[in-house]
Length: 263
Image (cartoon, rainbow, N blue to C red; front, side):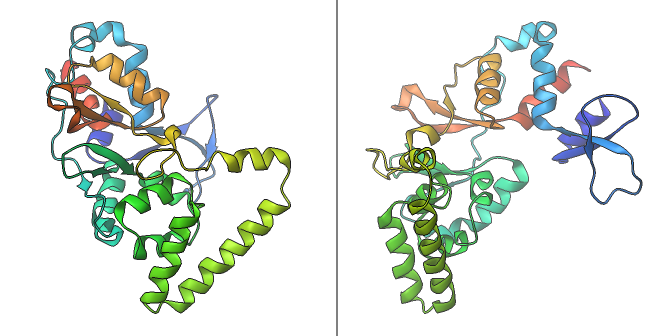
């Protein structure tokens, strides 16, 4: 209960001392040499899912009826400058969610995931400084190795802004990537092929489509879906409005529902 309350109060990761046995991870910078394990929102959700029989009266209810569809989600238009999304990305990091890229008609185009953005190399700063939100989304989805038209857009934007040092960095990274690709094995070449643009409007990979559900989806179904895709949130599309984005369901709100059941 204390761990759950700590997470609901805003803690993203708890370090739990291990006296004996268990999965051990050394905590860097700890006051002593003890072993610790990490405890996250996902761990707590998995714990409750494993005991879902005790919460059957809420598990089968829809996320809408439980009031879990949050409408104050973070969003940006595809054509907006990626730089304008930086404050939203910061908030997404704090809430363990993502920034939705939403078209003018309300349809979900994709998302800018802080977790995937963090996995990109230092040229991500150049992408944020020059690209639109839609192109940044594609850049992130390709783990910093975007299609040629996005690379050209980054270089052109840097040149127009007079950011010569950053342009040189991007060009060096491009040459390094090309050299690595040329000398890679057939297996590595196969991985590179996964980065080819799909037929989507913004050249995104189908494997990186956002995880979505409907307002009528049951709580347990949404949990299974989120855990299967290793995300802490699921976008909600309203089937009654041509599948426009209606909101988001987060692990934090789901944990609050379970917490209320324990009172």
